Amino acid sequence: MKNKSLILCLLATMTTACLMSSCKGKDSNEPYVGYLFAYFNGNAPWQEQICFALSADGYNYTPLNNGKPIISSDTIANKKAVRDPHILRGEDGYFYMVVTDMRSSQGWSSNDGLVLLRSKDLINWSHSAIDFPTTWPERFHRDSLTQVWAPQTIYDPEAGKYMLYYAIGEVGAHYITYCSYANEDFTEISMPEVLYDHHANTIDADIVYHDSLYHMFFKTEGQGNGIQKATAKTLRGEWTPEHKYLQQSNKAVEGSGVFKLIDSDEWILMYDCYMNGHYEYCKSTDLSNFTFVCNSDNTDIFTPRHGTTIAITKSEAERLIKQWPSEGQTLETIGIIK
Image (cartoon, rainbow, N blue to C red; front, side):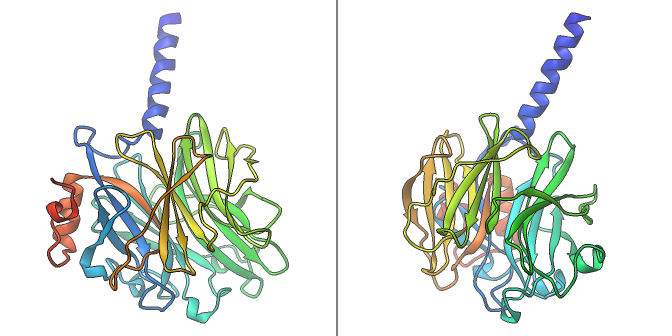
């Protein structure tokens, strides 16, 4: 019985490790060779659309579809515009995206929900728009709910479900990070609950798992704006803030995204220098001490705003280029194939 218990314990440990590793949700025999960046382009309705770009090194990106959207916001969102796309490679072979359902031309307090998207191939996406006052009228009211901003998704191994987290703003209150769990089809979410209250305005949370801890990066507002971090042993556990600014810039920043470089112990912290029109990239091995790497190389068709990055395989990159080609774009020109 002792041997059987030991085997079961090892299997459980290996399962958890697999869920937290970079091999999840793909053919483990095919290595990662590049990066996919999901983003939007600006504050005009025609820019508040999901766009994709590819990179060989995680810093230098070439937009797909000549910089045009890969999904029309008109077809997926109540507001006919979306922002802040977060993309996740799931544990189950699916890819997940969540976006802010918002048209900024109607005002910064005009959004009441988010959009869920799921795909098996990065090409064909199912979608479901969640309007909070309609879904939970006893909790959220159209005249007092001001923001449902920057949703993201992470797999919670304890719950065995995908957890969404996002900032909620309400009249007379500071922004708080809430969370919900998605149903199996990724079409509905549970009643929002508080995930982390910094007791001051915080938005744009981004969570990664490293060294047996969850690391939540977020933007503070109104008390010295910038990127800070809190850690916890479990997603729903007690979060401990570090009270240290991590951005390597004196510019206004938001929309932090953290990802691990392929075959490396280095992590990249990227954030949107939204007043200066570019992204900034920093690197770290411990997720606490970062050094500046570079700024994004923007062009007339690539002006990325708040987005996120995942590692992809050669076949995934080929499929994306075939579906949404840009002029002269190949795996060779991107640098994915030398």
